[in-house]
View 1 (cartoon, rainbow, N blue to C red):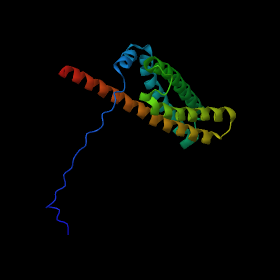
View 2: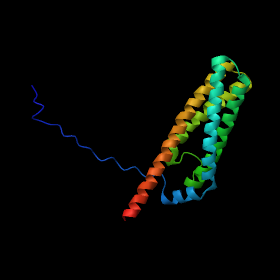
View 3: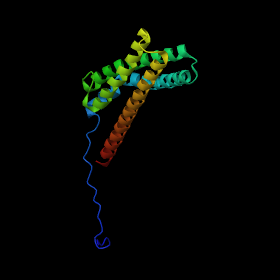
View 4: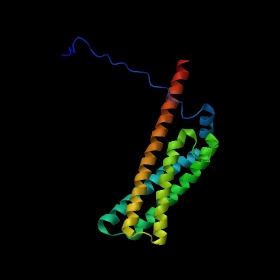
Length: 176
């Protein structure tokens, strides 16, 4: 029988590998000086508001069968705001990272954004061509919205990481 009291387990925490900061000092300077940062900062909450309104309209249609046109129009508006934020986001990425898309700091967010765009675009195609029934189109919209919610969470977490990086660099500068 193993005597647990005789051999206490010592937990050792290995140091976490240091993560590279999200922005180099030059990238942070370009980010802070760019008008595209402000544009992204305005468009993101606008898109989220459009998403919430549209989500309510789509769910209302699926639950009651009422408001088909309002729900369909709201998904089209949501898709337009998504395309707008994607195009301006590419410009922002070019200004900050000198890449139109898939800068290493935002690679996975950009990859997932491609799925979000594909699902929203599939909705528009289905709506325009009548490829799916209206309820099927709305379910497709919900799939697009679920992917958007995941992607928005990715970007929020990245924004949080950038703020933590900045706070850590400010603290390190104050100690020096």
